[in-house]
Image (cartoon, rainbow, N blue to C red; front, side):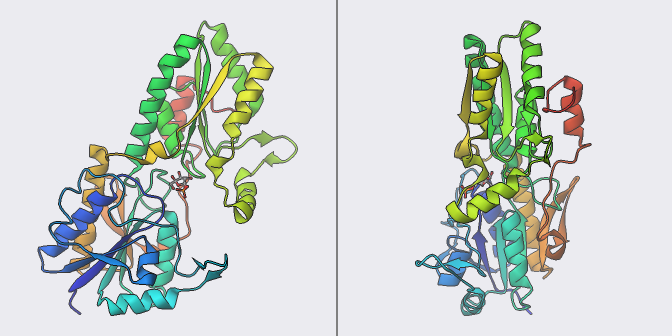
Length: 367
Ligand code: F6P
């Protein structure tokens, strides 16, 4: 088989570095005469046959551009929302359009959900698929890091830096609500880089009394302000239930109301408890989508470019059914079958956890 034409789509939440990755895939393949078609708005564009031409003009100036020129959506081929609120399996339409467009490979740039959806399509046995890992959450299994994470961490850290000066001036406690879905990579990394005093992540359910103790101790030592970084998916340990799995509760709610973890104001509740229990003025800042916006950092441009060019190489050597992954100094293709449906959480013994402990940063556990 010759590879003459490939399609590329971006799916899931956007993040900086997507355009840099599109550019890298296109540059690597177009020099070999392969045509490239941009598929709009994730898998929706594949199902509805909405595409754009990706020629030299469209591919120019992409390296530093945030977001995605292709648009994105969270829609899944096997579960497409219909106007009447029901869902329909449109896998057949996706396959038909792949054929109609004359594609020899579909490149999917996305997070954990996209890896799963790409694998579902792959299992149909008709499409050649290659994926790239993107997300500010850094929770994609099989890769040391995903592009978007460094920019998300930088954006969150810059915000924490700014909150430091106002926290210090007003002698307040600042709670910074950080994204990360159900993992703590973003909160832990940005929190450590920003010098947070307390960091709460989903992998380590916290006890309110430990947080309060840490804040009181800090004040006693003469520090008149504190910074608490809370991951959106963090949850409270409750003695009667063990760890309360906030994620499960959220999933239940999400089905009914389309809730996402960051929309539940856990940090607001925490602020109220702090003010009531220890009487220190507390403010909450939810960073939200600011973390996902703007120009990719040089590190993200580099990872996106390396992952994209490796994807190009795999296309040329016709190695399909793989996700490009960062492993130490290398970029390696990992079978999608191994990646799909898994999540990379922060291990209890991770060096970042150890670093936090050595620094005396409270994780809301312990005495
Ligand atoms: O996966 C990236 C992310 O920004 C998460 O951190 C967050 O939970 C989620 O997306 C927000 O999703 P949406 O863009 O659909 O509101």
